Image (cartoon, rainbow, N blue to C red; front, side, top):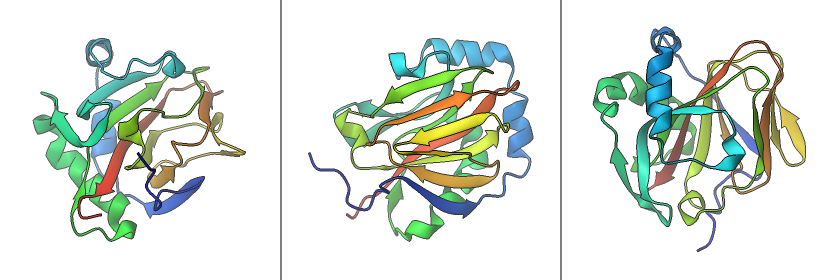
Length: 186
């Protein structure tokens, strides 16, 4: 399967996203919910190390991005998260966009995501987008060959097919809203 030719080759800045009150709601998620949701996550890859996830939507198979499912938490969060997704993806101009994966990722202080490439076929076509919810100056996002610092309330597409990694060298967690997006008509 070929990769989407419209995917970024490094990092693409997509612009500001008005987080409104949803940022405070995400920051208020109790640790027991993070732990419970992380224990059942489908993305248990060694490269993710100690990063916790709350999954809202996920692909039904790592072989195909076109089929996905919603978790029980999605109906509770959908009306708050969908406006963020719409703002972040506006620059693409897709009339019929879809979001196969939507999740929160929390990396602890001194946490790492080891260098890796998203190798499963379901990751080859959708754009991989990050919206930082909480960060600190010690967080470095590496997308070969450069290192970036992503700011809260900004959206970024990352090249998930290139070697990438993250290090939280700060004293606070890093929380990102991470999702995938593709044009159903393409």
